[in-house]
Each structure stands twice: as C-alpha cells, then as structure tokens.
Length: 232
Length: 272
Image (cartoon, rainbow over the protein chains, first blue to last red):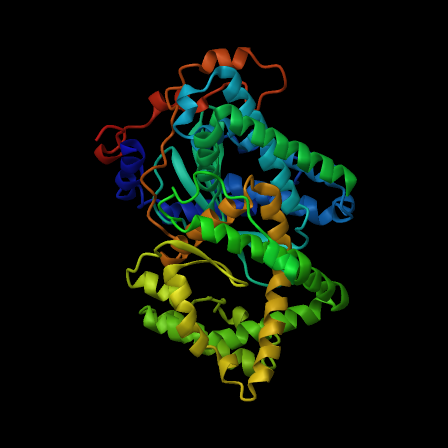
C-alpha cells in the first residue's frame, strides 16, 4: 500500500519536463511507422519502443487489421481471437494482472492455484476483449495527453478510440517496463480500470468460498462462454 | 407484469458488507427487476429499433437527444466553474441546432468542441460531495444517493420536462429511453460476458466511472492498488510446473525488473 502510494504520489513531481519532447518523438515515430508496412512491425520491433509509441502502433495495427478483414466483419470469432493472440497477447503481462486482481489471497495460494487462476483469467479477458473488438468497424485511435503520474518504469498511456460516428471512447493502458519491453497490466475503459473491478469481484468470491471457489467460478464462466460461442 | 414483480434476486450471504453498498439486499432486488424488464421489454424493443431503423437515422435521433441535453451540460459546466466548457457547450447548442439541423448532425465537433456530458450528480461531486451509498433505481439503473438526488435538478434542466401537453413529453421520454438502450446494446453484451457477477461488475464499474468523471478523467489513485507478490517467492517453480501453455515463461517479470530501476527520486522509493 505504501509502495503504491509513494509510487504514484512521489513520481508525480518527477519526470514531467520531457513530455513535450516525448510527444514530438511519438509523432515522429508514428509518422515513421505509418510509412512502414504493417507486416514488418512485429512485436520484437516494439520491445524497445516508448510505451506510448508501442500502444499507438499496436492499436493502429489491430484496427487496421479489423478494418481490412472481411471474415472478422462477417463475425468469424476465431479470427478475432487469432488476431488478439498474435498482436496483443505478447504485450500483456497476465501474471501481474492476475496477481493484482486476486490481491492479498495471492500470497497464500499454491503454485498450482496461481497457474490455474492466471490461465482462466487470461481466457476470460481474451474472450471478452475479442468480443469487444469484433464490434469495431471503422474506428481510429489517437493518443491523449497523459495525466502525469508516470514514473520511469510504470506509465499510463491514454488513448481514445474514435468511431466514425458518435462519441470517442476513452481507452487507457497501464504498463510496466520489464526485461522484454513494456508490458500492459491494466486497462481502463471509459474510466473503469479492469483490474480494480475484478479485484472487487474476486475478493467477494474469495471471502465466500476461497481461492478454489474463485477458480471454479472462473472455469465455469469460461466454459459457459465457450459453449455459447459455439452455439451462436 | 406479474413475472416482472416476481423476479427475485439471489442475494449472497455477505450482502451489504461492502461499505460502498450497504443497501445491497434491496439493490439486488431492484437490479433483478430492472434486468427482467430489460430482457422482456427494453432490449427487444431496442433491438427491433436498430433492426428497423437504418443507422444514419438512428445517429440523427441520438444526436437530436444529445443536443437537447446540451442545456443541462451548459448549466452544469457553469456550476462546476468551467467557463471554457460551458462556452463550448453553448456553441455546440447554437451551431448544432442551426447548422446541424435541430441537432441531427454534430457539426460542432469539427469546430473543436466535443460533446461533454454533464449532470448534477457530477456537479455535486465536483463540489466535494461524496457519492454516498450505491443505489439501484427502478428503470434508471445504477446510481448513488448523490446521483439519485441529482436526478431532480436534472429533470428541471431538461427541456423535455417543459413540453406542454404532458403526455407528449412521455412520448419523447420513451423515445429517448429506446435510443439510449439501443446505443448500449454492445456494452451490455460485453458486461454479461466479462462479469462473474453482473450486479457487482456493474456496481463497481459505475462507482469507478463516476469517480473518474468527477475528477475529469484524472482521479487520484486509490490507496489499495498493491502488488501482493512483487518479490514473487515461487516464481521459479511456477515456470517449471506448467502443463498447458503458460501466459509467460518467466513467472514474474516484475520481480526481475526491480533492481535495474534507474536512480529514483526519494519519493518514488518503495519504503516510506
């Protein structure tokens, strides 16, 4: 708790000065990237990129793929999942996401429980996320100015998904710098951080029926989603 | 109608323990009622509406309703001490009502003023009022004591409430309800997929979103966002014991990164 407080509170007074330059760099990078072909921009290329550049690249890439893929627009859910697995998955730290969402009970969980939790949570998120993506047709992404609570290895990148009609949708990412590049570990949709929302849900399940209870609920949920996807 | 009233929620034994939701037992009942109403009436009607009415027309209808809402946006932006936003909203109302043909087209957004939805609940939040307990209102859905009280001034700042033969205003309210529900079709499906317990998911999402909006999208972080496993004691064995493909071969990259942190300012150090 103190850790996170000081991490955010303390870092706020810190690296603000470079922001203007950072934005210039992002714009340049975005332009440069725009001229490169989508196929070349593999995950490896993004490993050393600044987090905002990475997010912008991956988002643009995915939206581009959604726009051009007729099968996805026709409702081919497997293809959406393939896209997510290939383009987004490499940039997400599900271990950390699960740890944060499970909260205090994580410390007492066995290795096997942790593995199952991470696996099931990953499945749930990927399925939901793919479901959301399959609704996307002609959307663009743009970066929004960061709220300024970044530190050197933990940042929030804020974007807006702009549909051809209607209000833009705020979509923010929290990333951490790891040995193999920046990794997303939380997602904010319209002001709602996913990890925090799941933390509350998980917490109440754990307090009622323990970690195994949560595992069961997650597994059941995934099975239900899988079977409903098949039948529809 | 009887079926609607008979809708009864299964209430978990620890309902009401969450300090943000002391009325959980009642709320769950109202939620179940709303959900039944939604499944039986609102959602099918909204689906029918999206099926019958072509998209450009629906967009026009949504824009017209949103344009009517600018009146409330102006008043609340002013009450929140945001003259810039209020001026923007005045511009939006004027431009969209005229050039945008009674609000049918949102032309003002191309002039640099994007829609900025406000309500009196947010205004009170801006003034420092905490949301108070979470409540679920019949038909209106998730709210809080503060936001529910805000519905009253919102009613008076809503031009629709001044439509003279009152039964005409009901017509407009119904239209607006269907328009809103139709716009939320994808979102509600998403919540259903993502949530383990939709009641909780909607509640926590609502509270988070409102808090975020009170702070204009930059809420101060909550104190309890800790990583329970930063040092990751079992990290090595977790990597070895996998049967199915694990999300990441290194179980805890977070732990590995800690030592290579650049010289941090005193405030960012973990211990304080």
